[in-house]
Structures are given as structure tokens and as C-alpha cells.
Image 1 (cartoon, rainbow, N blue to C red):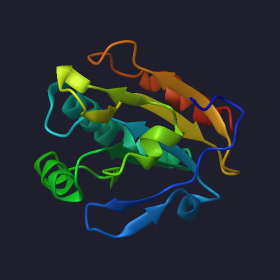
Image 2 (image 1 turned 180 degrees about the vertical axis):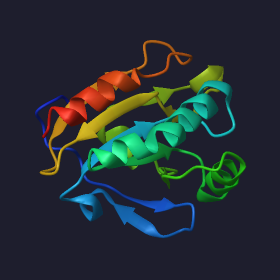
Image 3 (image 1 turned 90 degrees about the vertical axis):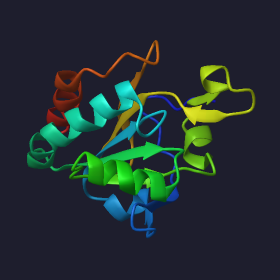
Image 4 (image 1 turned 90 degrees about the horizontal axis):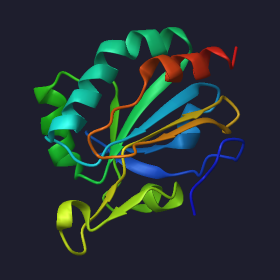
Amino acid sequence: MAVEVGQAAPGFSLYDTDRNQRSLSDFKGKNVVLAFVPGAFTGACTTEVCDLRDQADQFNSLNAEVLGISVDSPFSQKAWADANNLNFTMLSDFGREATQAYGIAWNNMAGLEGYVAANRAVFVVDKEGVICYKWLAPTPADLPNYDEIRQAISNLG
């Protein structure tokens, strides 16, 4: 079941690219942009993480931390983050717990029977852990509206 605006954000504990466990609760007191992407080293996903990289300072100035999440291994994510000079944390949801908890599983992605990835999605979680913005990609190639995300964070004060 998908989470909705106004609900508490489901907690998670996932590995980052250095294989350290990071939990959503580690960011309590900050606004958090959760950017789920289907797969490392793919066209639209690379465009999105590079867009987020280029705008990370704007999000940080609004007291918001960007967390990228995909089902790729921390090893693949590390290579991807290094190749694209990412300046925000990437988290590996290789067990699909966060993907399932947020209700954004993409079953049989790209026609691969049994392969489950995260749909492209963005959630803004406020300092208290409540979802205040949600966007789901209508198609895999669609990218989020970054102005909308910044506006959602600005509205939090």
C-alpha cells in the first residue's frame, strides 16, 4: 500500500555506498528528500541523480538532506556515485524493504520476470518524520519537477 502525504514516513535502515547502515531516523530534525530511482547506470536515473547533485546546495540551504535510494548493491552505487561525483548519500535497498514500505515496487521491471525495482519517486519528509510531498513517475523516463520539490520544502518553514 502506497504511503500518502500527511502520513508518517516509514522508517528504514539501509546501507550507504561505504556499507554503513543509515536510518531515516538519523536525519530527524532535518527535512529529507527521498529520491527513489529504478537503477544505477541507466539513462534517466543518471540524469536525475546528476540533477540532484547540481541542486543539492539549494536543498541543503533549505535544511533538507537528499537521500538517493535504489535496489542496486552498495558496490554498484559506489561506482555510480564516484563516476558522477555525487554529493549526497545513496542508499541501497537491495532487500526492497523501503521500496515495499513506500508502496512503489516496480514488478518485472523492463520485462525481466521476477525483478523488482523501485519506481521513480520523490518524497519530502519533514523534520517530524511526516510526508509532506509525494511524486510518482507516470513513466520510467519522466523526471521530477525540482521546483515543486523546493517549494514543498520552502513551505515547511
